[in-house]
Length: 595
Image (cartoon, rainbow, N blue to C red; front, side, top):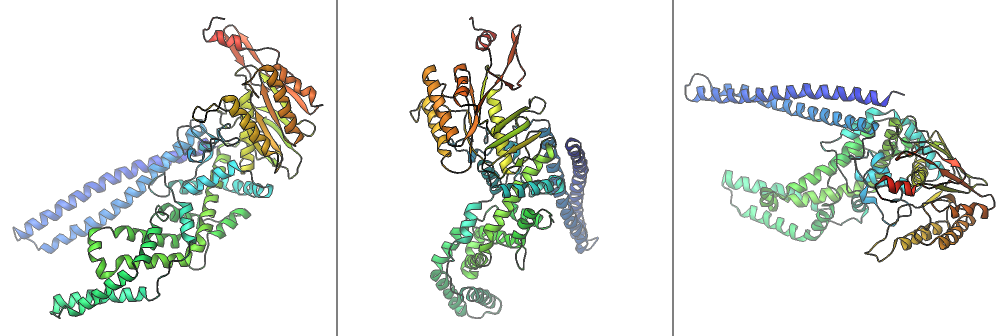
């Protein structure tokens, strides 16, 4: 595979070179347009005031001005596209340098504060997993990716995604085209409301409304023309106009419902039409990609052309608010004609809309995962086991959001007889980072993405975490109550579905040592009894004794640190056994507290 950094830099250079060239052409054509405008005025002056040439000669610079203006607009579009391409690859290079946390969608709108692991693992928000992975252009593409990260899919579905992602990994041209569609980067489609509108019951209008409306519009125009051109009495026009008024009155409720229902869901369709059109032109080999490509196909006109037609109807509807259109609407029944066309479109295409949206959203999500695979070639695709027995075995596992130059890999193995790792260690030694590394890589694995590990083998799981729990004055709950509530939610996960992989940081730290040991041991025993497996971290070495109570199903592991002068050094390497010292006092002294 090509070096991502070198390829991105090459494409960025090409885009910047094209932008500079097109900028020069833009300025040149702008000056040429100005000269042609001056030339036109000069010819008209010498023709009308000096009578030296025919005024018709001014048509030559006018025609040239129009042609240059068209050319100028083409150059503007190409220049803007080159500018966006340069920005796109600059952003990609920043991701490769691990400077990505300030750009891209954060997925904040998908956050669920009481979710059983999302906030604990930084799935959404600034510098989150979602911001790191998502390259989706549309809101429904983002939603699909968010759902994949929150809800592990069945093994066969994820394996199909793996095959699709592998094929898309090298499809740089396709990803670039998707990223550059349209003039703006942040574009959304009201997917849910659009699908709801498309599948809503039809709004009935008599079949005669369309032909009658067209006939009356023609007769009204003809009547007015005949009156002003030939002096024919106005009476026939008044008859036709009254028929228009009657038709408007008779259809007012149905037309109002049609136009009101389409107002929100069908806006922002430009990006959808362009995206579908680009995907229609692509050919795929992976079975899942081929199925999604078929989902975009319809008999007759392709989906992109059909969506573009609806977009044009919405543009016409928007233009009906213009004062001129309002004045002539009673004559030509403009709104009524648009309403009939919109409802006709829905009757013909409504049943396809949900399929188009779902296929496009999934292709966007797969493209995001493929971009991740391309930019992180050292990552590997996990081995997924289709078995009920709990298993998580990783070699060289690291935190996917920590810069690659600083991320320290560790080997982690759970399953078989070992169902619990009790991780002890000093402050800042890497315990919480290890939990997040395991959780985030598990989410990536079951979403269909590569993982930040040399290898990872895991079984179907449900994930539960208690790493970042806080008190809430608004909800009148303490941190301890928030933690035990989260533990209750984790325990509840064990009642259904595959085994729960639990990640519990500083278990029950909000209570005294005695209650903490008794409570923690009871919680862990209950989780193991119900088929769960996972890790707990602790400062309290008394909790390390839980391993003795679980008859070989638990192991103690730890992180170490070393104090060198006034500095505390960490190597973030996971080791067997229990940590033998604490660095709390040393840390307090390091920040200037007198101990």
